[in-house]
Image 1 (cartoon, one colour):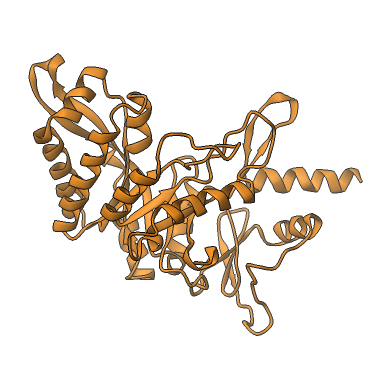
Image 2 (cartoon, rainbow, N blue to C red):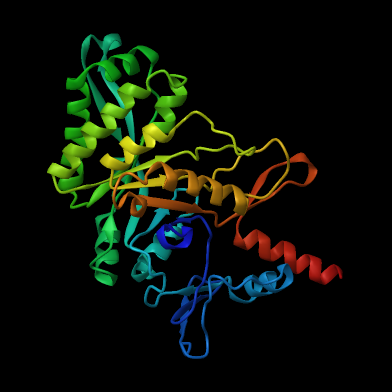
Length: 341
C-alpha cells in the first residue's frame, strides 16, 4: 500500500498564524482581521510540489499573517488539531478555520490519583482542569462546522508509585476512572477524548507494565465505544534517530492497539537526537509510519487509524540553546537577515 494513501494528518496548533488558500483572514496588529478571496483556478496548493528554501521563506514572510477559513482541501478522513495552552490564539484559529478540521482537541484535563493508600480510601482518578471548559467556544466551532468532533486531551500525570501500582492491578479502580471520564464527556456534549497515558505509564514503570497497560487501553476503548465516544491514543514513534526500535512499542503491541482504539496519534513531531538536526527529518518520519503500517497489515482498515504528527514550529539552536521558534519570531529573524544583507 502506498504511503501517501493511508497517512492521516494531525495538526498541532502551535503557530500563531498559518495559511493554505481560498478565503483568508488577514489579521492586523490590533487583533482585527480582514477577509481576502482567492480564485481557486488561479491559486492552487500542490502538496507534492517542492520549493527551494528561499522560496519557502518568501512564502512564509508573505502569508504568515493570513488564515484560510475556506473549505477543507485535504482529502484524508481525519485532520486532528490540538489547541495548546502555550498558544491561546489557537482557540481563534480552531474556531475560525473549523471547516479544516474533523477533530479538535483542547488541552484541558489531567488525570491524577485520588484516594489510595496514603489516604486509606478507594483509589480513583482525580480529573483536574475542568475550569478550562469553554462551552461557548465549542458552540462557535460547531456553528462553523457542525461535523467537527470535540475530543479533549486527558494527561495521565503526578501518580505516586504505590498508587500507580494499585491502579494497574485493580480493575475496579480502572473502571471508576473511565466511568468518570465518560460522565464528564457526556455532560459537556463532547465526542470522545485523547487519552495521553501510554508514554507516561511506560516511562514511570520502565516498560514493565506493558501487559497491564494494554489491558487498560483495550478495556477503556470498549467502554468509550459502548458510550458512543471516540478513543484516541498518542504514542511515541517506534524508531529512534538511528532507526532502531525504542522498545516503547513493538509489532505485537501495535496489532493489539490498532484493534482497540479509534486512532493512534504517532508523535512524529517529537524527534530526539544527540546531534543538531531537523525538527522531524523526512526519512525518519517515513520510516516510523512504514513501521506502523507494516505492523497493522493483518488488521483490515487499521492503517486508516494512523495520525501522523506534523510540526508547525522550529528550533533556534544558536549559542547552545534549544528554543522553540514560532512564526512571529521567525519573521522578525528573517526580516533582520534581509535588512543586514
